[in-house]
Image (spheres, rainbow, N blue to C red):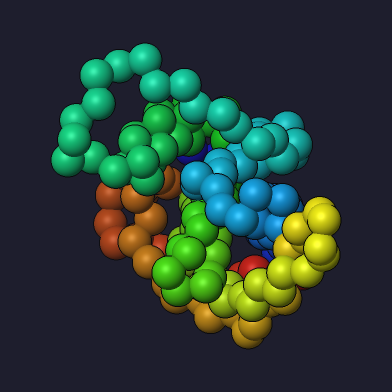
Length: 156
């Protein structure tokens, strides 16, 4: 699994995921989880996942993403991932960032304004972010305790 990512890469991955979530909410009002990978070559890619295997009802979408991404991390295909989710009932998005040296969830509350008579428009205004350190279910160390680089902080 290679080394970690730096602050510039973390910020770029976070920004891409957050902006995609904002765009989906402003366009459609909601979205399913969006997945982004920071590839080994440094490119950030949005990834569409096609489920072809039998789905265990006990597994969530995030569990299935983690399973898929864990294999890609072990192969060295990816250096980091971001999964952005919409929490409609809370009026928030959550960006889950994972890398060998970082594991955190960024809670991003927002207010949604609607306008327009003929063509309904949505406009999203972000609130203050809250970051919490979590277990890294994708980039797992081969032995020893999980290490989090607390000096890295997501943000535009």
